Image (cartoon, rainbow, N blue to C red):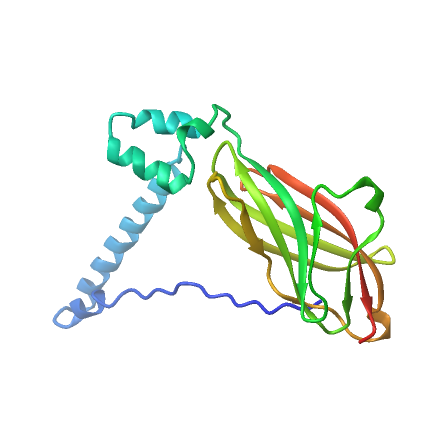
Length: 227
């Protein structure tokens, strides 16, 4: 299974202003700014090493709204942002992600939906069938309860004949509780081609947040057929 990924990172440049100071000075004077820069850099590094970020206490959404009870405009903004009313909130601090279905969208078979949790009678059965060399996406419907879930990620691991043949990871994002469920499609993938690629695969799909809290761990099977 193939997937195209692009990564980009920030770049920086420095030292432009410092180069203009050496025009009318001799060699001895040129060394002084460099020494000052080194000393300043050492002070900054020392400050960073001795500075520790201490996050505030985790609060339930109900408590967060209560803190701004007297500010009507801010309160309305929070309720609009969260997509829910105060009556829907409880005092639970930890978020919960409830998954309603998992589906697969492909160019060959359209969309196939499987309700979650998977029926016990379907354990070990093939949930999805695809043709070799076809494009597909996994699709999810889920609700977020109690509190904001931050940094929700997924990891999909695939095996064939007891050997791991693929693993894909990605970020879904941060989600607040709301009345309507979220619908999210994972990155597009391509099934492998060839006689060796055909057959039945076992897979495990796992979802965690940035606190390493596991919200779902699903074992399923899929089949790749000849085109």
